[in-house]
Length: 277
Image (cartoon, rainbow, N blue to C red; front, side, top):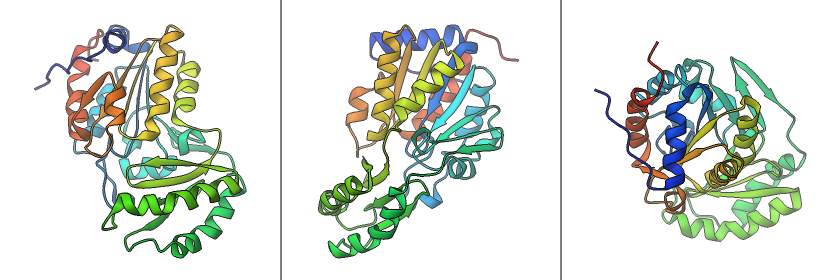
């Protein structure tokens, strides 16, 4: 049985969700992948959506103007792991917007040369600082990430690595992106905020909902704030965890992890202004 979604705790969030519900045909619903649609796991290669959440996205996509996923992963990887090709019309912006997948077609520019420099030097760097067992490197094609979730003391391992990773990124002309027990070295000039803002303007969205869970989602929250100033109502949703509290502090609406988001999405279509087809 559908349940009424929870209400945002902020006035701006309530106005944004009201606008989303009243004119869903002009609304944009956008979501992070890991930690939001899919639970965080020790090995990102085994990530999978929370049960039922793709079906809920499909139902929502049939009712709103645009549905999107904005992720730091390669777009094709998110589609494959998430089964996102089952969601009608979904737009997947990968690598913080540097890649775009829609309708089975992937569009992506070549990565900057600094990525190859990092790829060549990162393994030796990790070894040279004495990174603890369980530290590992994920090659995402356009970026590389160093994970410490499997280490005995993940936060201490990140603290050990971070200064050296920042210096390598600077030398390669890249930036570091902190996350939940991970630091990613990625190209400059792309982030989830720019990706979200660009998509809102592209589809002329009348309202926007964005859901995320990690520090890399805060630029998207900033974009929602900026869009409100431009007259586009919006609501931010946090898929909350005990690992990152900053995102919950910023969000208009907080749900308990991917399971809470799945419940929110199942209830949302029943509150939209247009009847189900």
